[in-house]
Length: 584
View 1 (cartoon, rainbow, N blue to C red):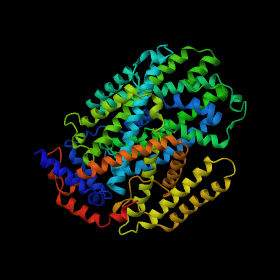
View 2 (view 1 turned 180 degrees about the horizontal axis):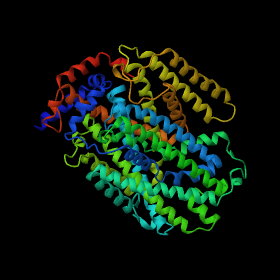
View 3 (view 1 turned 90 degrees about the vertical axis):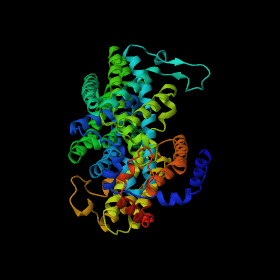
View 4 (view 1 turned 45 degrees about the vertical axis):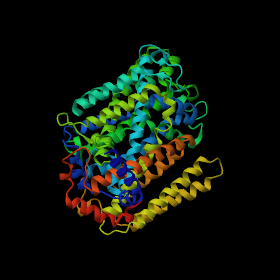
C-alpha cells in the first residue's frame, strides 16, 4: 500500500510540467464560482448582514491602532505638518482600489475576495498567488496588532513598560524570546467568537466601532481645543520635507487602511450584495479617511511637528503640552478596543479567504468546510487562529511590520489590472486580448519609471515628466480606441466603476508608486515568500486541482463528484484552447 502510494506520488511529480501548462491559466466563470464551486463547502453561509453591518466591519477593520502607531513617525521624520495630506493620498489610493473590489464583489458575490476575482480573470495560478499573499498579510498583521494590544493595554493600566506583561525566555533568538500571552489569549478568544456566529460577531463589532468613532471624535476635539494654527507653519512651514515628504509619508501610513477588503469576503453572508456592498466598502473608506486626516491635522496643530514623538504620540502630546497625564490611560483604553474590533474583522475575512482557496483544492479540502449549524467556515477559522496565535506569541512587531504593506499593494495592483481585463476582454465575445495586455504592461512600466525617478535625488524631473505624460497618454489612447462593456450579456450592471479605465489605471499607478517607496529588505523577504508559495503550488496545488477537476477525484467529500457536472468539465476543456490568450 505504501509502495503504491509512493509510486503514484512520484508519477504525479513527473507530470508537473504538463499539469502546470494545463492548469495554471485555467479560468472559471462567475456562475461556476457562485454555484458549483461554492457547493463544495457543504452548507451555505448564513445571509444575515445588512449595509450598516458592512460599514461597521469596514470601519473597524481599518480604524485600529494604525493611526496611533504611524502618525508620530510620519509627522516627525517624513512629512511634517503635511502628514494629513499623506493620509489623504493613501486614502485616495485605498478608495480607488475599493471601487475595483466593489464591482467584482457585486458581480461575483462569493467569500473568496481577490482570490476569486483573479481566478475568474487571469486563471488558477494568479488567483492562488494573490490569495496566498492576502493570507500572509492577514496572519502577519493580525499577529503584529495582537502584540500591539499588549502595549496599549499596559498603557491603559498605567504601566509604561509593556515588557512587564511579557515573559522573557533565555536561549531563544533575539526578537523571538519575548512571549506575549495576553496577545495569544486575545487571538484565541476572538477565534472562538468567530466560530460561533458571524451576525453575533457583527453586533459586538458595531457596539465597539461606535465607541471607537466617538473616542476618535473626542481626541480630535481635544487636540483642536488645545491647539494653535501657528504650529502648522512653524518652525519650517507646512512642507518641511518638501512635496516628496507627503508621498513618502503616504507609503508609511498606508498600513492604516489595510482591512477594507475584508468587507468583500462577507459577500456570501449579505442579504442584498448588489446594494449593500458599494455602500459598505466605499462608505467605510471615506469615513476612515476623514477621521485619519482630522486626527493628523489635529495633532500637528496641537504641537510643532519636530516635538512630536514617534511612540504614543497623542498621549505624549497631551501630557507634554497641557499636562493631561490621564489622557495616556484613556488613549490606551481606546486603542485597545480599536485593536479588538480591527482583529475581529481581519480574522473574519482571513478565514473566508482560506475557505474559498480550499474549495478550489489548492490547499487541503477540509479547510473549505462550513459548519451546518453556525454557517461559518469553522476549520479555516480555527487553523488561522492557531497560526496567528503562534506568531503573536514569539515574534516581535519589527520582524513582520516591513512585509505588511507590500503583499497587499501587489494584490490591489492585480485586482485593478483584472478589472480592466474583465471589462475590455472577458465581457466582449471574441475580443483580442493583446491590445489590453499591451496597455497594462505599458501602464505598469511607466508607473515604475515614474516611481523610480521620484525615489532618485534631484535632477530626475525629466523622468517624472516623461513617464507621467506617457502614462496619461497611453490611458487616453486606450480609452478612446477600445470598446468597453459593463456586464455579461450586454445588460446594465447594478453597480460598476464609472469613467473606466481611469479609476483602475489610477489605482495601478498609485499602487506601484507606494510599493516603490518600500525598502529593499521588504522586497527580499517578499521574494522569498513568493518562491515558497510558488513551490507549494507546483508540488501540491496543481496536482490537487488536477485530480479534483480533470480526473474527478474529490478529496474530503464523497459527494463532491455530484457537483462537478459534465458541462463544467467540457467548458474547462474548451478554455484550455484559449488559455494562452488569457495569460497576463
